[in-house]
Image (cartoon, rainbow, N blue to C red; front, side, top):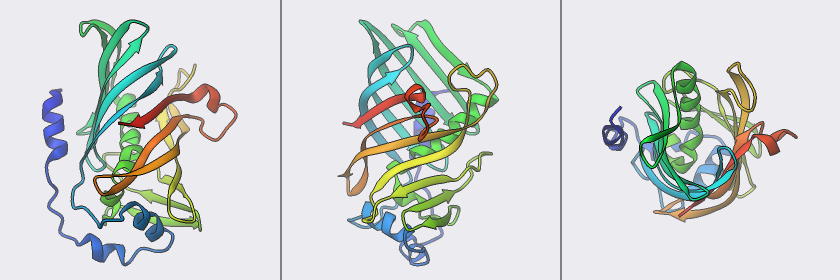
Length: 241
């Protein structure tokens, strides 16, 4: 699939037939606390973000990366990165768009390193799209998103892009700041040969205001989040540049 075409589609403005300010008035506390904390300068109208990151990722061993994430919570994502495997640069991308997901990573842009696609990769990619929505909290002020209150510090958001409907579980602070996100995501982590749902989580270590919106700027992510197996399942530590 043409990557530039994906980005162009993710960037296209949405023509909402609803008022986000009015819609937010109908949300319960603590949903309003979460959204209010993350939108100190008001509610933007866009559904797209471009996020530059750096950090370390565990492919074979931990390695440094730089990347850019293109995300639209209702359409998909494209993540392009360069990973330094020792002195060797591995360049590639992951994406989910139009119901399909894939990854393609190469040494020196032409030696195959890792490639995957198909229905299972697509389902996992759709789950990742939902997780990446934390970079656009305002986009989730949408009639397509069902918010539920679990407790004073736990809320869930549920919507479907293509087929996955697992709710995102947000744990928030008393001030509305985001502490972690978890969901049941389709995948085959570790030595699993059979694809299934497993707990996936993102631990938020720091947030900051970027272009008027408070977003996660430092954190960690991986499979089996919140369990003893997370030390084996964690594979991603990021900072927003």
